[in-house]
Length: 331
Image (cartoon, rainbow, N blue to C red; front, side):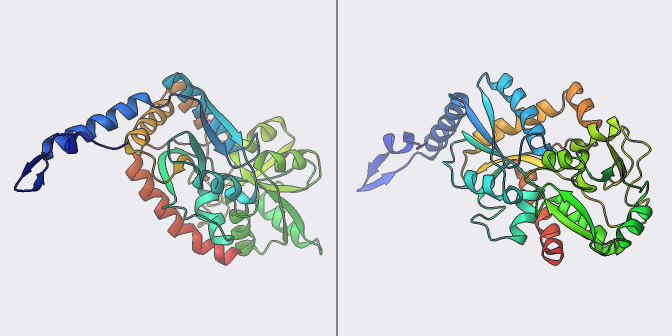
């Protein structure tokens, strides 16, 4: 939005144009305020770069529902899975920066996958990073019929298989993949990666008996663990999760550096007006602070964060610096 107040109120003295600075600043502020008040004036698309049913999809829909109520306009989730979140992220990065195409961004699509594959975007500068949702830890699970009730037994079983022990993940470059590969490197387990286009698809194959193990988000695996169709061995949270008090952490199991959160967030193309970004950030933080939502997230090991757009952008930059070198080593 262009600020015309200054040029409209310019004075000419000696052939020079003298701008009234205060009027210019006021005009810009009013223009931005009007733009924020008008947003959104039509439905907003939120691209979830993973398949339906996974954590990105679930969190995206939870937030979209509350944004729809808050702004009295539809926020619609559009699943565009592929390449560890890269497909959907590239789509959004190339979209118009008007706030009407947003992205469920996250550690997989922004901190890990770009370090493992060639992408057309910069994970920090190609996006307007709006709000951090938080996210679940990674949990190692096996099919209920697998003869392993602990990580130690799991490692021993894998080593007894010459062809390796297959495990599924939400996709190459996802946090589940990276945690599994770090675990393999630390434990010496004989593991073979089977990538999927989303967390839910990997769990479907696990409970169906097509793969014996999976490293997935706790929120996606939780229903299957509670039903007894999958057995949890350990998770990557700093401490035990209240909803699964009997499941140990990787730290407790002897793997002190396997601490990771599969965080998800809301981003958009670079250049979204700051007023729109701030408005969305405030609405997301308000939604995540609601007691019923916090209770639901806590059951899945998710602790919402409370960062403004600037703080969240710094968080993304830090996570990229932390995980990109590890992802390159783990390949």
